[in-house]
Length: 512
Ligand code: BGP
Image (cartoon, rainbow, N blue to C red; front, top):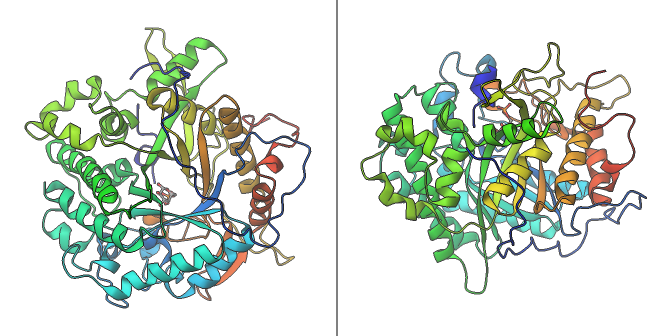
């Protein structure tokens, strides 16, 4: 997938790290009983991570569950898109994926042995509401009920995402996100889920990466539903996603059990900038460019997060795109701008920025040959985990969870029978070193979810990209924990200290 298509999307105001008082936010409950082997690992390095930090792993329904047409699940746009010739690498689909639907007990056991404190997963909308609304599929709900019980027994706190891209085919046929009613369809679905599971889930995310879903799926045609909408339609679809978030947040609060305080947020696909040099001017330029929304607007953090968290679209984006929004869009902003308990950031990389000769911030280039992951779009830029949270907190003052971060590597079995993923371990350590810097400076980061627990169906890349801490042989469904699994287990047991031991080179230095 091309660089532009994936992360180098974005970009409004300088964002200092203001010492603003935090809104009240309940921390994730500590697991009732720690898994065996979860005794703290004593290390001399002090960890700045709070003792109740949510060390977690993340997955998504269509990427791992399989059982695509079992027990009443009906097709989503991804079932359809992945069948279109040339849409995914070698025609891969999520029909079987990790077969997690049948193997969830084994999978939760692996999470327990990892010592994971939290698990971010998503609910397949068409498994529980085959037509997207109306008739409920009890068998589908039962699967998630069993999964939740298993997680809680293992001492793993569930963080549920309501929508991770697998939009119901039946609702897409009615117009999908382009249709204004789509916000109500989503809120009704949210209400059902919270009524059923609000006794066991207290952490809710509405959308996963709505910016990527709209941009790749509705503008560039590279993800489901494979549309290439003109701006006047794409901006309406994006606006309806925002309305859906606002309505769902209200529905979640309305459906929550008395005396429970659900935490509500969204997992946003965050691509920002880091300063190209140590100069304060480049630092300010990186912050400005991170929130600029005049170009590639639908991918930009501010285009989505400003309405969500400030109740207004950013002025630079509006200058070009106000005409593409629905008439009287301003009237929807109060509904979009609901109280949020946290902001989830999916951060994989960032780009260098500097102050241009004209005084404006500009994107700089990484040097030729700069180290990258197995995907072209992901240069090794651990500083993304420092500047991203810092800039975002400076602008929005909300507690943050890193809801995704990880590295795709071309893993294989080595002759000694193990899967040595040294590059992933190195990246994970660097990323946590830089995240720890943000925490030390007072950015309220509440948790980190590694993407991913398992190798899985990576959308248009099919099974080509391996992101897991656990290797999955997709023919036998055998799971083999990689070296990174043991490394992350030690990180969790040491509450992050294992990542903060002295290193030979600084975290951001990836090329000699
Ligand atoms: C995020 C998605 C995840 C996962 C990850 C890896 O954008 O939320 O579902 O797929 O990216 O990226 P990719 O699969 O495109 O390589």
